[in-house]
Image 1 (cartoon, rainbow, N blue to C red):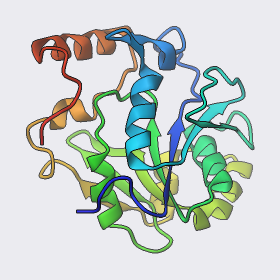
Image 2 (cartoon, helix red, strand yellow):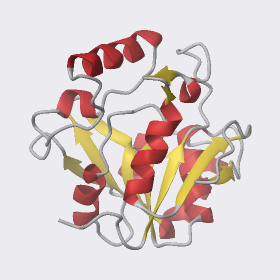
Image 3 (cartoon, rainbow, N blue to C red):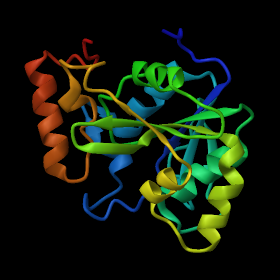
Length: 209
């Protein structure tokens, strides 16, 4: 297994969504007294010494630990955020992670990195299917993503397919904690469920393999 932080990899947190289903900016929603974005920054900081925060068009979380990245092409959703961090990266690979998956572990990216192939994104798969925001991207595909964005082809999973993304099942790697490992926050009820799960564990955010 690759030791953390992973060499030749930057981390990019995608946090520019509008949070319509949640009803307010979910990156700032509180879990155990900390905003969700804080959990993402900690995870990203374990993956890489370089952490970028794709914030869309509104810089909502100034923090010295992250490099703020505005969307180069506005209003293009997660694919636009990924494109923006790839262009800004100083490393050949970028580990992409969402802002709303507080129990995500950095070890997931060790597994993704071990499956990397030149010119192809590597994407985690959970029992729910593809998790395109838990992924590792080669910066060399930035030009192809730019073309898709300018043509209005914004679907992230379609971009993964077009680039022959490598899909890596995480079920066998993290069998005990798999369900909550990839639990993201779309609605307030999701946040409540994660909080209840953590209370059962005595407030321990770290998950055992």
